[in-house]
Image (tube, rainbow, N blue to C red; front, side):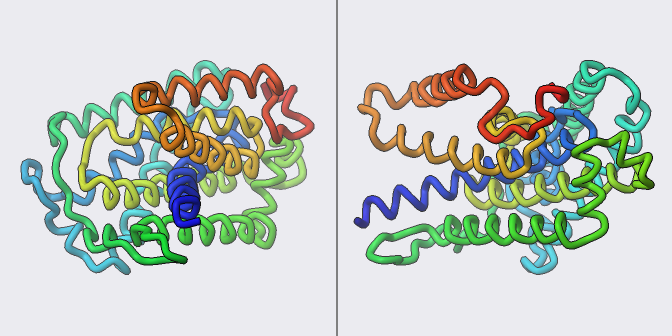
Length: 304
């Protein structure tokens, strides 16, 4: 029972990160039909913001010393601001371009952010001591679970519930859902395109900030490449869940996290280094079974 509970918490913790990343990508795709491959660089940028204003130290200065109730909103605001700025400066000018052009633009934007961080901070990972006390274990039903895992799971659930309430109960949310279903018709019916798209980019960037806080606390390292693995898995989750399906992206993120943890536990020792190969084999199998995704909306064929 204790081992099972430990595996469950590990799976939910890893899946939470992938679910938040997939949700951030799915929000943008739902409104703009854009897979924003710069999302991983938003995550890395938010982590390195915590090292500002020092460019060569190996521990947190200034921002990282803020109390948690100030640091969290600051990082979320940085992620949202960076995402909104990218929409205004880059994607708004390409709104009428074909999807391939916008996808290439997202790659280029990520390349720019990546090399800005490289220019100021170098490629050497830096130690970052953020809330180290959260690594201490707490006992739940006999299992010793790191406090960070518990907080990550609870925070993800709260974020998802808040986002559901936002999408269902607010004017912004209703407009975003309408735009995700049929953006052209939504504009004809009076939905203001710029407002909806900016809201989607803002929420997506804030989710990138959440992931940055989790990863910085979990790994204790600031690395300019740290957002790339999350971005890759999150993109896969959006495809498996069904492009355009927000709840599908979230569920697929949790599924991939669960499969990854289960394989790490049950694979023979000599096969564990190849865990990712087994994970992506399962991804291929699921797409061969349902190419449109597990939870694809009715209009998914038109979107793809």
